[in-house]
Image 1 (cartoon, one colour):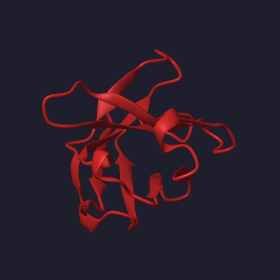
Image 2 (cartoon, one colour):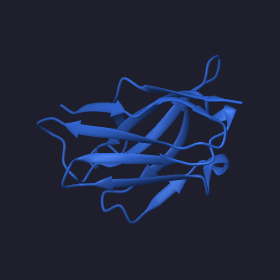
Image 3 (cartoon, one colour):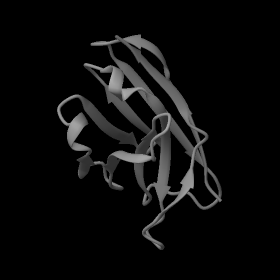
Length: 120
């Protein structure tokens, strides 16, 4: 199995920055897994934020975070990051890390989430 543990959330003023981290572990986890960040705001469905492939060279983003958020990974540390700059109140949500097995092609593993609150 795969375990994912997020950290780095908190309260920040609009325009500020936060860096989220997601540490992966488990018997079946490897650097071949695709990794992503999702978020869920109160009363809304969970939405995709950003993803990175196994090598770190291919990334994708939700349109509303392009140019402000950067996803990256350190395979030596089995850790994925989400650098969030120019934060807006609408970025307030619980942020979840997810891992996608190359065998299934689906995000089958999820962390417990970390709260990000952006005050205006």
